[in-house]
Length: 445
Image 1 (cartoon, rainbow, N blue to C red):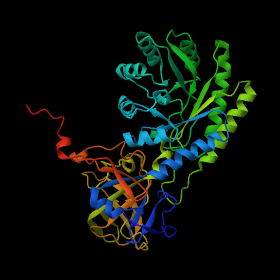
Image 2 (image 1 turned 90 degrees about the horizontal axis):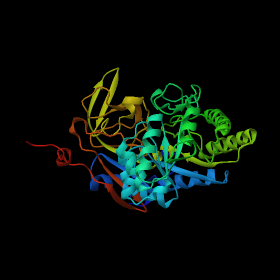
Image 3 (image 1 turned 45 degrees about the vertical axis):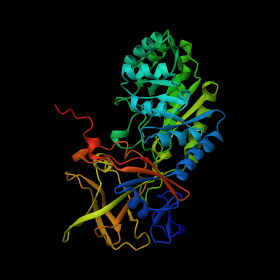
Image 4 (image 1 turned 120 degrees about the vertical axis):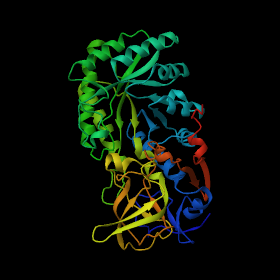
């Protein structure tokens, strides 16, 4: 759609997709496509995913971990954002999937994703979800509690199968992230704790289950994790626990310390590179397995949002504004908390730029508000931008993870379209919802 002419002058370069540039039109370009032309073709608001950025990140994790450890798998987090097109790219790049629902599993199955490379997480999987997973031949079920352990054993038996499983063990390590996304401490709904003796009981029961094959243990500390030390401490605890469980005949064949790696959302908070996570995790596993006299297990890594977050950019069109002299200027866009609820529930911070004037200097501080009927519908407070007028296109980078996955039809708003860009071509991978879509489940009696 356009030819790129410059990249260095882009203020948000570290946050934007790797193909971001300014075209001859003077507009922001992604994947060789003019963003204003994309809006003209697909409508506003619009989510744009850069294929090269996603593929590069998949390859980076495989390279960084695979270059440091002899036997490793990398899983893509479906809950961050999944579609048929994304699942197929992930498969092509050699990653597995972690899913947390029957819906995410259904996407994997529709995409013909190799199910032996799919891991099923979640704290309350339903009998139907587990039955579907077992009968389809899912690679691993990550057991989160005793109820699920017994339920899965019965379901696998009824299906005439022996299901490979991991136990999700809570190491009680605080990753110092948001309380709503901390998952590896004692007081959380996820995982089986060690301190209470329940972890040991779970190992014993899994080993003595007739239709389960206990392959290893799994943990997940939370997300996004900017610090490296929590991984070291968790691995020490978990490898020590695995070593103690040898008294029950447990052999640690597979181990996952989870992931939840951080990404850079704003200019002043860079995230550690993939290499830093890879170094500390692989070094810690080798060190503590040697100390405890354990052979090195197969390592499974779950980078989480960091695989796709940078690949996505949300495009909105500015409309109304409200000036409160001496207080604040609000600029409203045609999206908001229905397509990105993260700022409202987590206080998440983002950066913004004008896609139609990407090189213009910032001259004012504005608050980017959504169009939905909540005072909390604010996408960015105190964004530094050129003077924003109605019709300007506001681009918010690092929108590839959890925005669409957590979207809703609040105020009966249709969800936006999603396009994948590469080599100057754009491909619609999810159409915009229509008003008919919003009413398709209504029963008009």
